[in-house]
Length: 211
Image (tube, rainbow, N blue to C red; front, side, top):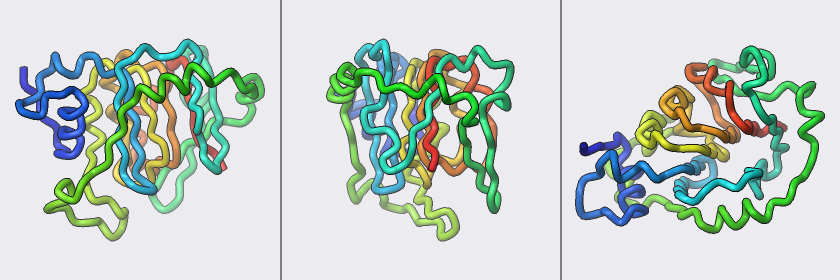
């Protein structure tokens, strides 16, 4: 069955990554994509990966100048409120992992396997044509070049990395459509809704940037 995405840039990148630029995408085409990387703050970037995830999935460059706080086995908690702190300012919500739960995670495992995996990831940037017809929202600074609902069209994602996404990504609702999700990184994401937050339960690893 053919599938189409709201973001023409997202669809173009997937077609290029899969080598099917000359035809419509099908559900079968996207089954092997296991990893999604998104960044929107300092330029726009998308990355896709098909390789097996390393046993110890550690982001080699997580946090940038921020702290990257990680928590393992979130399924061991009764509810998201047990380990997540939601902060709100002028209608924008940000997430933090409660500090009391981070002591056991204060370790620096070998990242060599992760670096090898990251070298297999293909990264894309938009071209001028991808912005045609788009107008920047002066309040949110979004162009609408990405639509997070599109991410739900990659149902076999096991790891999602929202690395520095102050624009474009304002909802985690798409997580509800990712039954195989194991690892999630949230970096500088400004949420307008808390939909999808319950999906933070049951992850092998959750990482959230904190300053």
